[in-house]
Amino acid sequence: MASNLSKEELWKIYKTLPDDLKETLFSVDTSEAIWNICRLCEINEVATVAKYVGKVLMGLLPPEELKKELKKELKLDEGKASKLNTYIQHYIFNPVADDLRELYHPEEKEIKEVEVEEKPKVRDIYREPIE
Image (cartoon, rainbow, N blue to C red; front, side, top):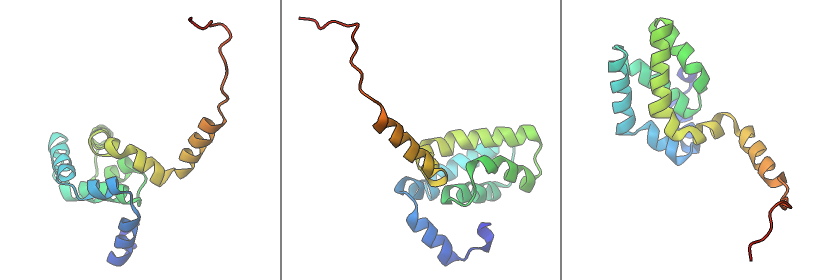
């Protein structure tokens, strides 16, 4: 998907991202986390993992699809793919979960806002005021 995009198109997408995703995308902490996760999972293709994490952070690959793509690209067994995905979700995506949710599922934010606005205020008739 992203391989078909030019550098100019990728920069246009990057400029529309929330600030936290921009920072996470090029953060030293993110690159160290990817390196450490790969080491823990005994994966040598750190650049490939970083490429797919970047696709998720750019809005080009839904986080739910990451495990499947890494499993196919790196030819991982189910256990190793799950372990890799769990670490990435926890250490890289969880800190920016709200931004990712808004990027991939903007309708969920609208639903939550409507639910909050429509919640009626109810007076508790079982409690008496303390004087």
